[in-house]
Length: 400
Ligand code: C5P
Image (cartoon, rainbow, N blue to C red; front, side, top):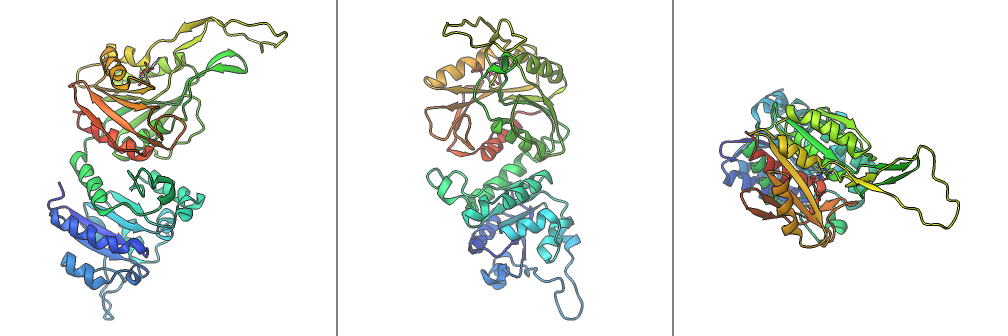
């Protein structure tokens, strides 16, 4: 997949710069051509001589290559590359990228880059967690850059070690996946449902399920970053979207979500149903707040909501891909397989509350994907962004 691919590797001043040598070696082994661009601080951590020996190319660092006025063209590099990878990316470089502060060759190359950009942050965990860094990373996501989350897949060290640069072989894996389905999402229309639905009992009380919307929003961003045209139907959540290719429709109840989904679905190539839809709604909604007047019991009569997934499954055209989720507490695979069939899904993403760090109201997830051909793929615990990339890769292999 990386054979003949031209990669610009940006290296910055982090202790993880030594890993860049392994990254270069791995990329070259896979047949890629690598041009290193290093920041002045990067050179304090790894020597250009090592890197030029590995890449068989002079390392680019200064605006001018000689004192004779010959200068390095960042514009040419921007046109030459099939991908740019910035690994390790320090908080400083991420900040400069997000704000266009072009005071070194790496940033000017980034600003001239026509190819997709991958960023592997590497820094102290407090620096990584700081709102300034997270805001800058969100800005880069909004620019369509791919953030390779630090410490992805590391179960125990997820909380203690977040900030450590992802391992070179994982970064190479991300690039391989990207080139495998590059272009698959261009011009494709994808619908995503996310978050909970609220079913009103009265103007101040609701019935619903726990759901932050994080998983669905991460999938929407990942599809948009691949070039898809995304419609995100969101229940009541406190989240914002970053990518400009995401059209958002806000709904509150299952009925509203059903109507929005049924009207959008026929125009789409695929739908991913992440929403935790309330299964029942009160038969009657009180128009005024129900007063607590005595200690007497009150009874709510509930009526079933329509199953959006099953309704879409019933009208699915050939070639359309339908993906559902299942959140289970026990007998997970059995129930998930039943849902896959009943709702006519192409694959179902299972998360079990039996797994720590999986399910709702957390930033991580641990999934198993079951498909309609009977295959079962289990993934390790990852951030919801990284899980979204895995789901997008599965989706890509099924899109026509
Ligand atoms: O049956 P269950 O709610 O567990 O099914 C989960 C899957 O079905 C999810 O993909 C969810 O978004 C979808 N669903 C739906 N409409 C419903 C209930 C579930 O789209 N009313």
